[in-house]
Length: 440
Image (cartoon, rainbow, N blue to C red; front, top):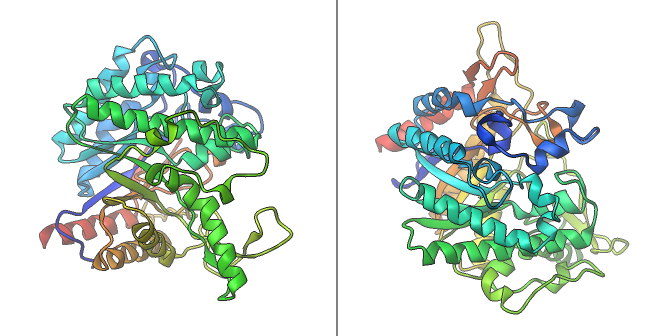
């Protein structure tokens, strides 16, 4: 069994839209993922998060399973439109009451909540006003964040402002495969900058409000590796890291955007004082890791590199299984940025699970994936990288965005017809690892 420092946290992670369901219950407003998933052709067979795991009504059952697994931590997100149905203005007390019940149930079961304020679910009313492309959304977000701090600070002491700004900015506004489904590279950079201004202002509001606890942000950096040891491929790797990691880390830690990673013709709408805001000191960095790209030089592309296929084993998503990449990324961040400490806030794998006649799910591939990635983290820690916890993605099979219900990441299976929950073998393995570490 892998051994970690005594204070290391073991958890799982989810996101509100992926598990809660109950999209019209108790005054919840609509969000851009409601709209996007109901648009023909945007998700697999038009599947939506309208019901998903029905966690909103079944959270006590789910928390009981978390306790059975021995989890000491749980990373989740708040649905903005449950708190402010229109994104700003009127506060919905029933939404606040729900999260207070949820947080209290976790704490009463010995599980510390780690709360993400924004996991891609912008209220539709704000999208109608321009969404994140409109700087006014920054002010609405800060109001929302302050409302959460005021409502939950007696229960929550670890906050994350944004989950994966790359996805909400580039996948949502340049590539069109996430909500709101736009295809403008200029919008992507504008949205990214507005996320970072909102992040910095929220950190400042947290400090000024005197709230106890810690605040950070969660990134899915892509720290690519070179296809060969040639100087050309090593240079391609550095360019790829500028696009995949420095673009998202430099504004936070260095108060600048790397010029090499700004697409031709794009202007980032930086106002006076913005870069001082984006680089406001915060407590920790969340790292989401699933795979590492391999790149080689290619003078024919605008970026001068291309991603190449590997012969590595793949998950059901088609992503390379490469735990060394997690070690590489943690050490690279530690060496290049003054990060106080990190959590691995997401890491996991989708596979084609098979339910046997005895009802068990012998997901040996997922267990091996988790084990090897935890070994990579343990190696980084032994070399001095300050990683304080691991949040396995995901607690339960759920709505996988544009893939609908076709991909299963959970260590707990959900039968979407009956809502029956079944712990997979990987979940039992994780339980035993946690127990081993707590007994040391």
